[in-house]
Image (cartoon, rainbow, N blue to C red; front, side, top):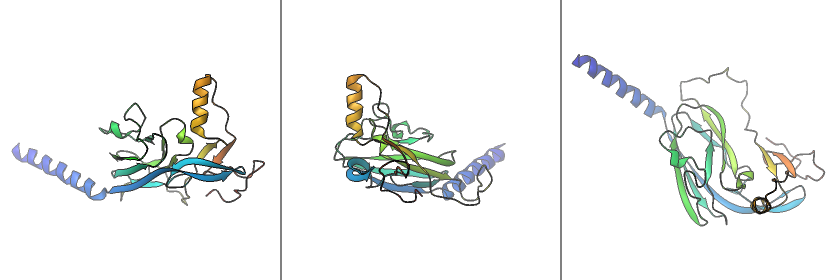
Length: 212
């Protein structure tokens, strides 16, 4: 019986070691700040990550540990939510403001750290503070561990992610505050975007370039 128990312990240890050997710690640095972009022929100051809209794409493998250092250089409190990620024993890293954490104040930083466990596919991350998710967002791609296959037929080709969004020709924080004060409905966006661009279907869009 003792030998059987020892054998099981060794099997579990080898399985854990094998899993750890294929896992990695993936680190990113996000600086949330304000910068000016032009959409629909209208220059506008927006809040975004690392000066881009959408923000950076995160690539991980199932089993990896994701670490994201967030520096808030914007004038607003901010949190980041990892949409669809199973937060096993890391609920504090989930990101909903006033639910699992307080907002990161301006000129402050916070590090999110959690494991990617039992998941594969394309998800996304976004701000979870007021309507800043309109401009603070990006893709999160989870690939299988090395040696494992996707739970579907291997695609012929892999393209960059396509992210749909909404665009307002005004500061989205001001719009949300005014909506709460008036008790009315949130206004319809001035445009819908693909990878941050409104495309050619709007009457004034100089951003006529490929979405991907």
